[in-house]
Length: 101
Image (cartoon, rainbow, N blue to C red; front, side, top):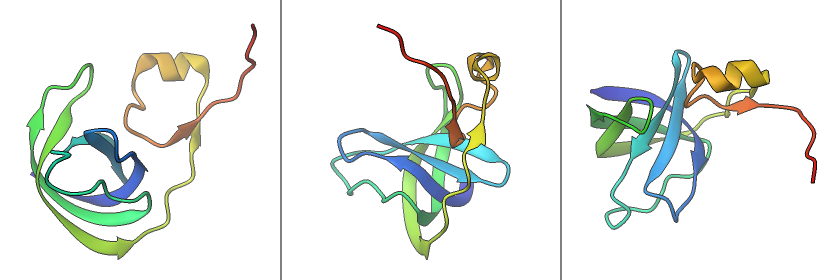
């Protein structure tokens, strides 16, 4: 499969990053030994194969082409119930709440 989108989350220490386009977001699994993790805001063209994730589909990266930079989309506000449904898995979201000790 081929995907084109913007990196919304990435960490060099992790073997995955998140890519989002207008239709949604998805976890992209990468081989950490092959290439550095892409930066947040990087526009990418991804080739990969679909794979079973922990609870949502993922893509196992085969090739990656950097296309420049894109603006990261605005975070979508979610309620606790929406977050628990998993329907927004892979999307850039925000939640508000209180932390108690």
